[in-house]
Length: 337
Length: 145
Image (cartoon, rainbow over all chains, first blue to last red; front, side, top):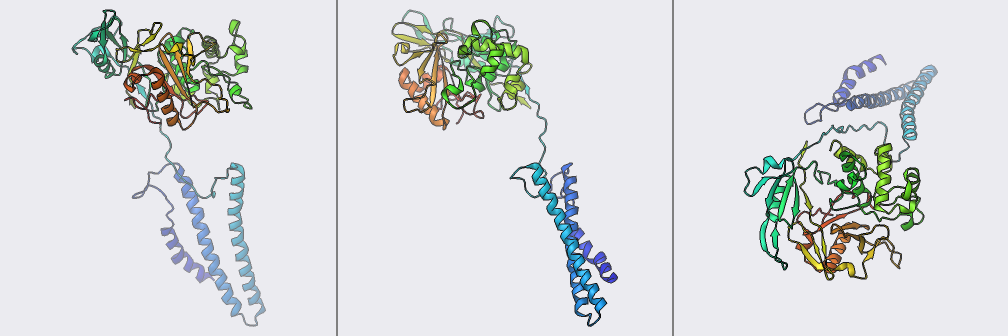
């Protein structure tokens, strides 16, 4: 028996060690090592041990079988061989049962049908912080020296006269501002057209209307939730930028959006109006002529209640769990604007 | 990572109304003149918001209990159209809204692109698709749906 174990120790086990691939990272063609791979290493050792134990058990069973056959009439040798075989089988069953026990306990704890075997460890690359810097455009620099553009009355702004494009029926000039708008927009700035004066004013913009995620704000012409409209309800520039973005994600900026459960009977959501404020929240924040929830589709009332909520609770009525997953993006995107 | 701002366009002029026509401000600088659609009996004034009109569908279900695929509201003060897509597939809903507005205003695609408008999906319809101005599909700045 001693000779067999020595044979296993010096010839069989080393072959398993080289084939076990215990370190699953850092090698040629493998990903860089991270903390997760330490778990993979421990897992590899356990798997390797089970493999080794299985081989040893098989060899001992064969050895015990040979002893059993060759025991002849020697009762003690026969009993010893029998006992050896039984103990090996029981030991190996205990090893496998331990594996099954851990698998069962972990599945019960995770409570997820998609959870695989416990010893399958997958290391995935962890997300890295991706700080985004929004850039202020500066028309006074970008358009300086460009033909047709001169300094505007607002700080950093530039103004250009549009191209004359015929005469209107009332004798006034008709203008075509396409070229001037394109020049302004090529600097990632805000172009403001005045078709009566025939001018385009180019001003710096912060953030613009979309980023790589495409998240935008209410149109500047939307009286219910444009940034300028919301600042009229007492919000700061930053708050107005954030809430204009949230209004887009909530209702597309349509104040007349009725309470959800009036269009979808059976739903318990009464989210209503531009900012999709629910009845209970409304009643806790609304006052005066807007106090009744029946005013939730009124753009002014909805904005007033929203403003009150933002001043008291920040953005938590929209960023809360299961409320609006895009609201957090709005806050992150327009903070500091 | 640095993100370049998307340029923004603001139309300073207000819309002009006459008995027979509406002169809408446009992003090209050339106003778009259309028949005064607010006199169309199909247009419904929003009772809660004076100056806001439903010019294409309302949020109410149809007689067959179906949800409208889109809603188009119009803001009288700024000449602004707001199109909300309410039913998937949104590409089909946008196409329907485009065709409707083209016929309703009786203007071509170029003129439609130059209007002040938004095409988006409300979060209560589809949160993942919300918050984005998809524009009209035939306009240069459209976002695929």
